Image (cartoon, rainbow, N blue to C red; front, side, top):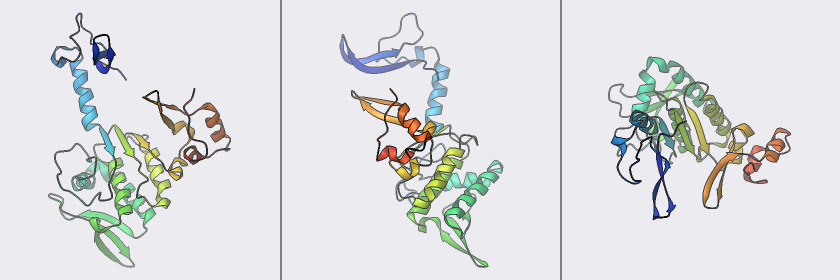
Length: 265
C-alpha cells in the first residue's frame, strides 16, 4: 500500500488544524487545508484510490428489514450497504454467464440451513419487482416471496449476495454479522467468509462480539482492536494467547469472555 499524500488534524505550533502527514512531492507544498488536488502529483493514483474506496469496498451492517425495504435506492456500485438494491444485484447474479458457479454455491448454502429451498427466482429479468424463494414440498414447488421469509433467512441470504455479487468487491467489511443469524448457520457463514479471498471475491474483514463465530477462526485470522491513550490500535494477538490457542488451552471464543484479547507487545 502506498500513501500518495495525506493530512491529519493535530495540535501544532500555530494552533489546532490540519498538517501534512505525508507531504505531496512538490518543491513548495501548498499550505495544509487548502484545496490542492489539481496541483498535486499522483493525481491518477488518487483517482484510482477514490474509485477503490467507493466501488471497491462494501461496508455492511444489515438491519432486520434487509431484503425487504427498497425505499430510497439510488445509484450504487454493487450491493448497497443496507442491501436496498438487492433485486438489481440478484439480477446480475441470475443473468451473468460468469455467475453460474455463484448461483449454485448460493443455492447449496441456502439448502444447508433449509433443505426445502430449491431456488431463488425473480419475477422479471428486465425489471424485477419481487423475488421468490421456491420451496420443494414432495413433488411440488411452493413459491414464497423473499420479503416473507424469516429475518434470519433474509440476513443470511444478504451476506451471500454481498459475497457473491458481480463484479466482486475488493474489500468486504461486515459489522457483527452474527446478529439475527441462526446459531447453527454461524459455522456455514464463517466458511463462506474464509473461502471468499481464495475464490477471488475480495478480502473480508469482520467485527464480532460472538464467541461462537470467533471459534470458527484461527489465531492467524484474529486481530485485536484497543483504545490506547485515545488512539485506536489494531494488531495481532498477544503471543501467550496465540500459544494458548495453538495448544488448545483456550478457545478463540473465550477471547471475548474468559481471557479478553490483548495486543501483542
